[in-house]
Image 1 (cartoon, helix red, strand yellow):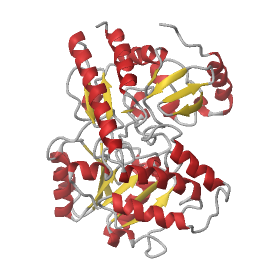
Image 2 (cartoon, rainbow, N blue to C red; image 1 turned 180 degrees about the vertical axis):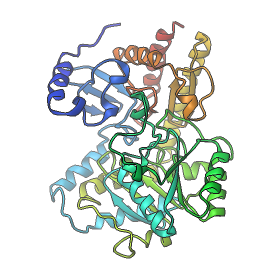
Image 3 (cartoon, rainbow, N blue to C red; image 1 turned 90 degrees about the vertical axis):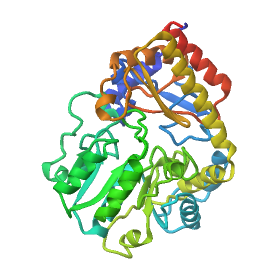
Image 4 (tube, one colour; image 1 turned 60 degrees about the vertical axis):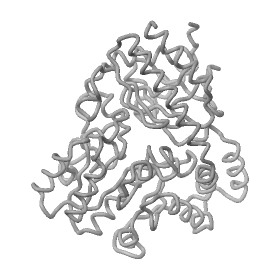
Length: 431
């Protein structure tokens, strides 16, 4: 296999480390967990990305999920080009905000009303504040290994890059007072949730969960888990919040809510709302959302929220997802091909690995046992994943540079791409 040149990426990384902490603007990009330096990307198109050294890769990150139609999709691109000639930002109300709000409320089963924000972190943080304001209660329950953004109160046993870095997942700079109202339960363990409600009777405002965990690697909800959360929250008058930053509009037009048939009280979405642009949204039942300013007393604001360019991009992408069922048919079929092929390879190789997947979303864990929660995910062989990652990267296949992340398939991927990736994986495992 011809090793790709990385001279310019290496030089840029060295320069970046002088001016940017760790040389990156997000730890998830650091490549630290796989023992190499980031590849600096110059452009992306369809199912490919291209680095500054001229290397091309089949892209299985898709800007961490939102490029569900593929990179630089022509419909989204044209919409953005047509929009920017009128201005990049107004800080004022626009018709596109109304169009987007109607579209998202039509697609998301739990949405009566929605508020646009600028990131998934803002969305989850704001949803929890609204839930506390609505219930008048203080504490929230999250799950070990689930990542809901970097706001202070949620960096408690979080997932994503925090696991890959090793050591404690709690962040320095988060005070005890910020963290004291965040309670942690075990994913897929309803007993752990019920015990917290018993221990903190009458003081739990909300339960927030990734309906499919995707920040400790992809971990699926076991039968009855989401339904159980719904029943527990109903019993204790707590708000059930689905963090659909990863699963929203990817697993189905209505996200995990539609796929699993469990409707939360609120949900949070990320950059898929804007076709990959910096945007997010939170929403839910009308009586909860009407607690938000300027109608209610829960304050939340954002100068750039509902940015007209991001709204235009999002409307173009979500309209396609709403109206064209072939998108989901295609990406789910390719998901079966890719993840099923990986299962066949590791079984043939008798490798200590496990594949978790749903639709176009999946993870190859370098651990032989089932992965059902944070503790079982952490048993993964990080060196094994790093070796696999570097082999696949040199072969032109671009995955997340850490074990505890997801792979994403887009509408632009083809069967030939998947077969090429499987052939490279088979070479790594020696089958």
